[in-house]
Amino acid sequence: MPQKSNQPKPCADNKFNFFAAILIAFTIMPFTAYAEPTITWDQKYYNPAPAEDDFILPMPCGGAMAFRKIYVASQGPLYDEKIRLGFLGDENKYAEYWRDAYISGAFESENGEAARYYLLGKYEISKMQYQALTRGECPKVVTKMSEPAVKMTWFDAMSTADKYNLWLMENVPDALPKEGDYSGYIRLPTEEEWEFAARGGHKVSAAEFTDPVFPMTEDLNRYVWFSGPRSKKKTRGGISDIGLLKPNPLGLHDILGNAGEMVFDPFRLRKLNRSHGQAGGYVIRGGDINTPQASIRTSLRVERPFYKNGKPWTSSTTGFRLVITAPVINSKETLNEIQDEWSKLGATESKDAIDNLKVITSEIEDTEQKKRLEEIRAKFAAEQEASKENMALAARGALKLGGYLCSRLGEQASKFEGTKKLYENCVKDFSEAECKEMGYDRMEQDEENFLGFLNYYADTIVDTYNIFKTELINTQFPLLKKIKAEKGREKDMPYVETFKTHIELYEKNGVIDRNTWLTKCRTLWEEE
Image 1 (cartoon, rainbow, N blue to C red):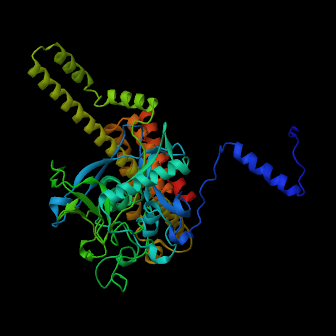
Image 2 (cartoon, rainbow, N blue to C red):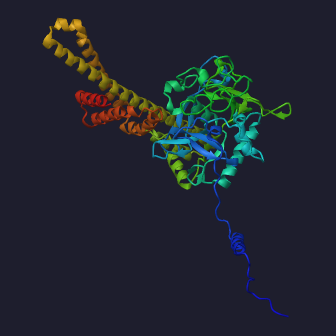
Image 3 (cartoon, rainbow, N blue to C red):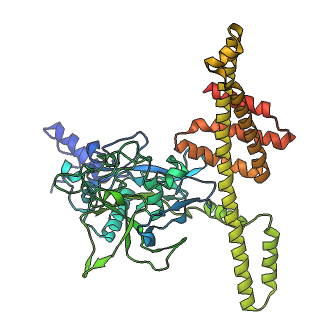
């Protein structure tokens, strides 16, 4: 029997050999890379009001979701900002009474600033986005799918976040920001995260932050879909598409009205300065299209049951937006920092007393007495820490005041000097009486006011130095710098820095150098 030849038979078509070789190569070659998903949706469907600093994440089906970075001042892993949430109105005090809360960001600022941030959905998640994440088939990319997704349970919202996380980790693992050894992840926002952002965060002043709604330059109906003729409610009486109205100061759309928004936390009553101990259903924030205009406010919070009449509770006016955050303990280095900072909590001039209590506690054998002394020591340390936090806030307030006084001093000095020169030129050609008739009769009063303002600025420097340590002033300066930047008030910082420098000069030489301080503030004003 003739042996089979090992040589390949000639082929009449050379193209066959070429494509066969390609097929074999792809068959035996392992796939070590993949093409990242591309965004094919028109921007109007996922970001109808684009801004330069939006954070965009891809989604299944060629979709995308827009987020905004919410910055919080920070100086280390245990630092958090004290904020006041709720309101003092007569309505719903049991649910919305003022309370102190604390907030921090999940990710370090990219520019080395004294800040951390988390990311909050720029819009309520739309029907199109919800279907892309939860259905087995891609949605039709049409305008009617741009309304907020509603009629889902709280568990559906949590499941949606989970599906989005798993899809991102499988398809675009580097798309999420990273902190320490971990990538960020998506979930529902906490009440603190939601309300801090809804009020405007550090983009607004402390007074504006406590107002019922964030500052608006136009009527409420230009920012919020609510119940009533003044809101341009859709003729069919339903929820409106995302992003049609103006945003809040942080660039968040529909944070009030339109669809109510589910958050991560269970509902708790307010009991004066604290939350009640019972955890109930879940919380809906922001009001919706059926909320009366008089009830629209950032503090509005409503409880909804997880189940009602044997079924999961849903609503045709309730949806959600998502947040991107990260684990708190995200690396060994972070844990070491946390432990180091924890050991310093409550450490003040009273540290010796706290340490003595610790020693006494360790020497007592009676278990009950030991426990009671330990409780006293812990309470004392907590009070010391609270006192430190309040002093830090007061120091930051003193810096803001000093910067403002410096700018006003520079303005008044410059105006007074200008008026003085005009008066001097006037008396060269006219009598003093005629010049006074021409409007220069307030020269003496203006000078008295100006000198009084200079003395007030000098007193503020001395008082700030006497009340606060220079070290505390220096630690609050970068935090204030970041907060001013968030508000778009970077131009205030040269005055604040000048005020801080004048405190340092006073500490160094003990001289109340009004003329030098005046000259610097005036120069800054005239250079603007």
